[in-house]
Image (cartoon, helix red, strand yellow):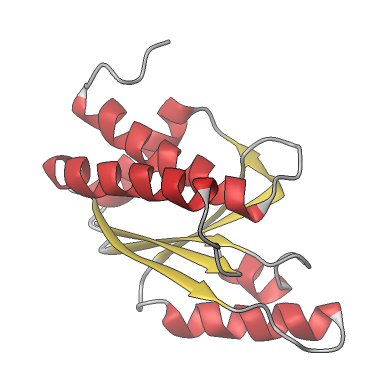
Length: 160
């Protein structure tokens, strides 16, 4: 299953980008052994519209246009469901085992996500109840993707 990340906003050079890249690289190298591959990391600039609702709608339209037909869409939102790492790995494994070809994880912009995305999403997850800067969210989800691969493969990286 091809796994992608869609993010509103561009990650600037620096330690956050380097760390996220390190985990995405680990995921890309280890994932194929368990049927997961890194498809792409798509960034889009934040909308310049004058109000939040229009910005969210414009950003959502770009995301929805980029989704392959039949893609699983996972939204990251502080009001989403909290999963531990094993449950997240099992969720990815279940979608893979159902024969899903594409899965996209979406990080919204500063204004949040448009209601159309919640309507389309297969699941909405949170990385805890706190609000995180987008740079850290990318690093956290990259690490969790790599961790999911290690859980699915039985690698000792994940220890409880």
